[in-house]
Image (cartoon, rainbow, N blue to C red):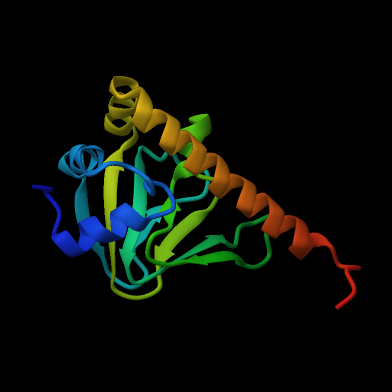
Amino acid sequence: MPSVSERAFSILRESHLLRGLERHQLEGISEKGAVTMLAPGERIAEDGQPIVDLFVVLTGEVEVFLPETVSRFSRVHLATVGPGKCIGEYSFVDGKAASATVAATRVTDVFCISQKDFRTLLEEDPALARIVTANLLGILIARLRDQNIRLDLFRPN
């Protein structure tokens, strides 16, 4: 039986990151992670800071943004992320610091698993690694395509 609730387990099963995994694979992942409740405004990642966990939003939503700084005169909204979507995948792939700040916009439950534990699971199960890698590529490519559309200012309606 998974260490998360059945409701959380079903959201994980349909999440973009973990879609297509066998039940035993999802149970292994859920046993290594935990569900955390975020209060409105609570941050789970800070632009430029190390990030050691990978997150899947279960309920609620988070905003991904670039915070106001000395060289950035205003906060820049990048995305609103809801149930089934993951956070921290850039750092998981490249090992670098967070590229944006992520904060809950309302009460939000997230599943979190340490990158170290997740990597270990991937190394131990090549089938799991293949599915997750394909899912990660799909997530990242979809974001690039969406960004291309947003940057194409001359696209006719």
